[in-house]
Amino acid sequence: MRENKNLSWVRVNKNNRCPICHKTDWCLLAADGTAVICARIESAIDAGSKGAGWVHRLDDSVKPVVMRDVAAHFPLAAIERRDLAYNCLLSALTLSDLHRENLYQRGLSDRDIDDLGYKTISHDCTDGIVQRIKGITRLAGIPGFYLENGAVRLSSPSGTLIPVRDAEYRIQALQVRCDNTEHGKYKWVSSNGKYLGCSSGTPIHISHQDNLQNQEIWITEGALKADVAAIKLRKCILAVAGVANWRGIIPVILELKPSWVVVAFDMDKRTNELVQRHCKDMEQALLQITNDVFEADWNSDYKGLDDFSTSSTFSTSSTSSSVLDIFRPVSASFDKGANQ
Ligand SMILES: [Zn+2]
Image (cartoon, rainbow, N blue to C red; front, side, top):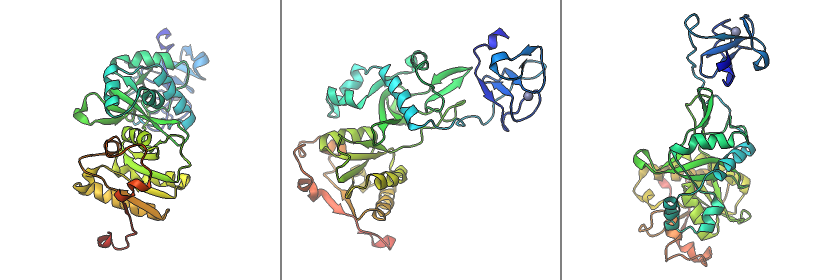
């Protein structure tokens, strides 16, 4: 059984019973389903340091196990371990000239880009990268990483990696601005559905320039957009991955306790009924926890908050009061048809 030396082993469970003793506990299955360490039934091979039991090769006599429902069963690692693993990953990567150029066009400087930690990821490099970082930190429970034939792998589309951070600047998850936008421009680095993988969820990105004590918080859609706007507006900006994911905003607002909140979704909200609906629901939920909620409107020539904040009509010297004319106070709606 020398070939099993490098196999990863996972505990049997009710979905994946031990094929030797048919119990749902104690025994260990090889990640690729080709062997088992049975804790109850002896074989000629003592498992030794691998675990208490005996190794059984699964072949013709006992068929290899097809793992069932094990995907996404690995619990999400604590924020400290995700932050460490993702920082290791980012420090092993560089940013391509093309991606850097794209970020310049969004209004970011080299210093901004370095501070934010944006890097380039490509399919070809992921195996080499995993080899470099897996010795530094455990990767189980880190969204994006999973096991395949006993080896740790990273699942990510090729593109620009965008760290999604919490209020303490820790990386909660990674998003990718995809090079191939055929199936969507932005994707999470997630191994949901992969063997021993883990879902990223849809955490709220908190972008700020050391101004968390600022009494004002803006809400927009998209982490990159929030980063650009936070730098240009010098404000704390929260980003939902999509307007439908707004519910995660509420606990963040409760924690940060701003005096007022400005909702600043893309101007296509004017024509998109679904966006309008989520926006209205979020605003009503916000009004339950804070008195002052505003909706920001601007010239629809500028689609998003980032476009607006980097435009010539807005400069970094602007103060809140000078842009207040674009704010519309949101009032509580008790009758759905009566709002505004
Ligand atoms: Zn067993």
